[in-house]
Length: 220
Image (cartoon, rainbow, N blue to C red; front, top):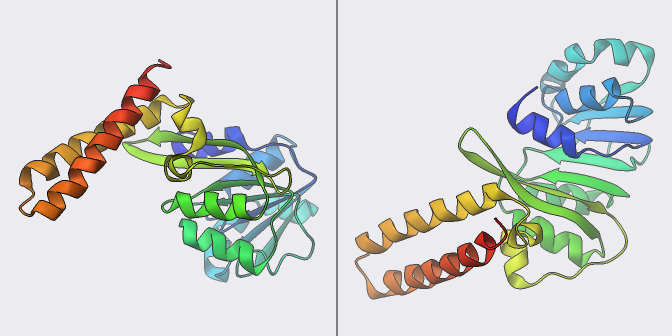
């Protein structure tokens, strides 16, 4: 197991009831069951056809009753609340909608593909406590991970909502690389900008990225 999947698996905590929403091939659920990190696991997908991929991988666990496949939209079709919910590979807006339609699980691990700031905002507004919020890289792509609890409360600054609290505290070298890449792209766009309005926006973006890079570099 390598790359993105391995990074997500390494962040999964133990649970009694685990649910993998939008489970794709089911690799993370296989990890939880193989390492005895949960007593029972639910694999869920809105499409029965898509769910078949995970069902093939997890067939022996399904037979023994420790893994239960569910065709459902988000968490609404789960027969019982899960105390750990994983949602990986969906957009941030989709993750928020799933939570709004169901409940905020006691423990969660989210890996949004985009709009991570919207997930952070929703969690903080709901009174959740975020224990880990950082970025990792795989194959030239960058991914965010958010691990936390439904209760405990939290506070975030505007910049932390946008970039991730732990990233700004130097927890991820990948984030530093990502910011350097963003700065290079911004410099290229600034050189090609034709209007004063575009230049002003890009200049402000450049200044912010340079400030973030300067602050984060101190940790390495």
